[in-house]
Image (cartoon, rainbow, N blue to C red; front, side, top):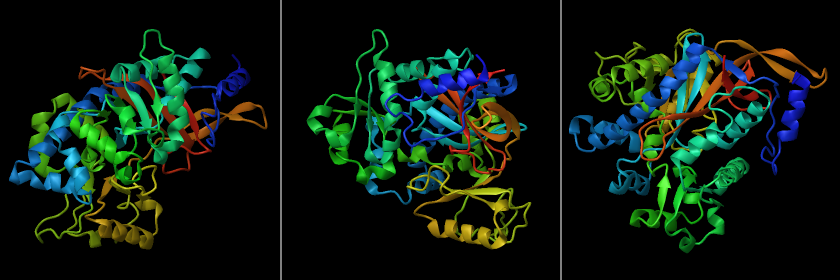
Amino acid sequence: MSPAERITHLRHAFPEQGMFLDKEWVLSPEAFALDADTTALIESLGPALRAFQRACNRLYFESLEKPEIAWVAKLLDQGKPERIIALSRHERWRDDLPSVLRPDLVLTEDGVCISELDSLPGGIGLTGWLNETYAAMGQTVIGGADGMIDGFAAAFPHEDILISRESGDYQPEMEWLIRRLNARTGGLPRSLMNPWNLTSHELIGSSIYRFFELFDLANVDLADEMLKMALEGDVTFSPPLKAFLEEKLWLVLFWSPQLQDFWNRELRTEHRELLQRCIPQGWVVDPTPIPPFAVYPGLNIQSWQEAKHFGGKQRELVLKISGFSEVGWGSRSVSIGHDLSLEQWAAALDEALASFPANPFVLQRFQRAKVVNHPAWNEERQDTSMMKSRVRLCPYYFVPKGTEETQLGGVLATVCPADKKILHGMKDAMMLPCVAS
């Protein structure tokens, strides 16, 4: 196919019942190519991140029993309602983990950098559609044409999907996913459910993939009834009702000097070394004074007041809220230090310090995305031109039911103009599946 023919194919494939209603991005006739080293790194990250998440779960529960690390659970639980904390600690799902995991990876000169770890990710349907559509144009996408559908079906062999009003932007892509799952030979019929259209009686015996955030629980229709049923074993939810696992704080705790013995014990050497390579150094923005003879490791300061006076090079840092908040997603709380004036940086730090303990912020080393060129469709010229870009990669790892293996279903590339510092879905970006070059 010529580039123009591929664009025509993309447009004709576009809309099943408004799947991309109100969404707009730049088209490209080419999937995004990853070199062999980056592809291998991403494939290796799946097992490492699964092991890391299991270790995080174990650390949380150990910290409830061991006074010397009690600060871990306290940090992760602060600011959360008692009901949420009690749900997180319930014995019924103590060992349960999410069965789909999506890190946000910044593509750098040295590989990739993990900026976030999402266990309730959007984009499953979108990436499935992109894989299917670009594969039909002859491109060998990572995961294959059906990789996302196969992965979801293996991880959730009979779950229905329940999506709340607050997550309604993702309803069309979840409807697409349900249609593809129900079209599979021998598959059990599934439903996409909205809690405002249900009664608690209709949910008895259900296994549900929940697509709503726990910080939104007070606004979710039928929440009290669903939680009561979950506690009584009449309904099962995946991912489990564990708000502590959905915090960016874990990426910072990975670097905590006090926890290195734990990570060394719980993680295999190759997993730990890979995570050290990919997780940027970070700190909890906690206003509690430290002793005058101590410093924050890596920053070499004794108080956050000193950080307000960092020069431009020192401010190559990213500040963001950890998670249990309506502004904890979609880059809405992100401040990049070297893009701000000294006054703006000081104000951002003040906001973070004032937010503690109800909504902790984390500070991480900024990792610069490398500049790449990728063909973008130019509507006026009816041809492609190369767009200077920076890229965020989102691999989707599924854990088949009853296993600890990870299955890479696909990789979504968000290819943004090179002048963008925060990489996310936007009308000026390209949303593409990835191929291994």
